Image (cartoon, rainbow over all chains, first blue to last red; front, side, top):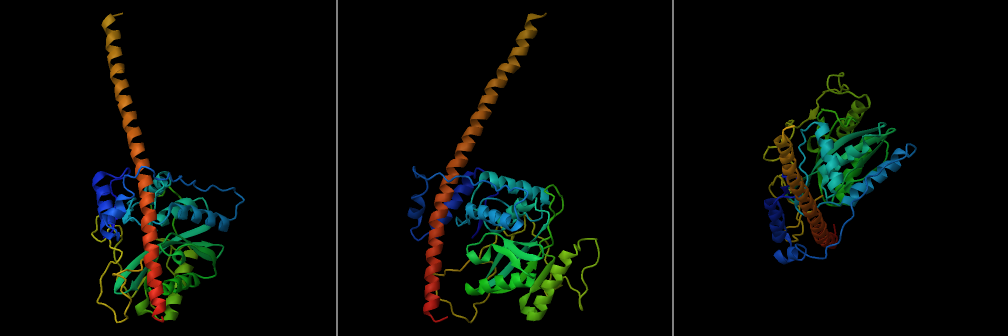
Length: 307
Length: 68
């Protein structure tokens, strides 16, 4: 299971107890592993990281490195309880308020929180385009979901984010095409035995922190099982072209293709609703169970390589 | 001036001070709780991060040992 703290901070007692119960269940030492920390008198004080500020002359790639360092300093959240509730359908202004709270409270985060934070910390970089990139992968009979914040600066693509795996988060803005960036992620997934199944690309996010627009999370949905390699690449580049031309809602037609489909071969689902049963916050890391595939994986007590 | 008017003015002010103090006390308590929770969260995260890394390393060794 995967829990979300919905009651704000400080964490309320039921949520706090649930967090420790969960740790007691999954840690090999059980409750003992948890008790070593809980209530300990001599816990180190973790300094609150400083939000990076930049001189106007600081180049964008350097700023991105600093933003990524900041995100990394918060640490990936391995506790099993997500501390900030993200409702993807919220207007941007609400999500930016949440990002500000994240910087104030400074707690470990997961990938979706890192995307919101990345947007917040790059809003003043008006020459930098930001767009969400979601991945669905398959490993050992289960599906996994991950998200990073794609960036485009001067025609070079990169990414910001956080992950359990080093190769599935920050990418310096050096990739000449969006395809190269996505293929790099695909290869990184392959190195940890995950097979990339779907990529969802969002549209560019407004730089206005007070915008009431919603983030468009899945402007293009690409199902790798139903696309040839070349078609996959073409769809990625079409999305890149749409972003370059700033083709958005009501601002003009998207780039023409032979059979223009926003969603290639996958029925488009509605945006995640905060109360939907399978929203990101409540979804198990090993989301949808599928029949076991034929490839045998070593069984490390059911260990799943999560990303 | 009516002497009781002065007394009436004093009473609301007298009530406000303890209420303000109580709010400040609650805020301080909440802040302390947050700090304590944050320290425990990061200590727990360290334990769980190490656990995850051990499991991942062990899995990778098994996969490489299997000739993949």
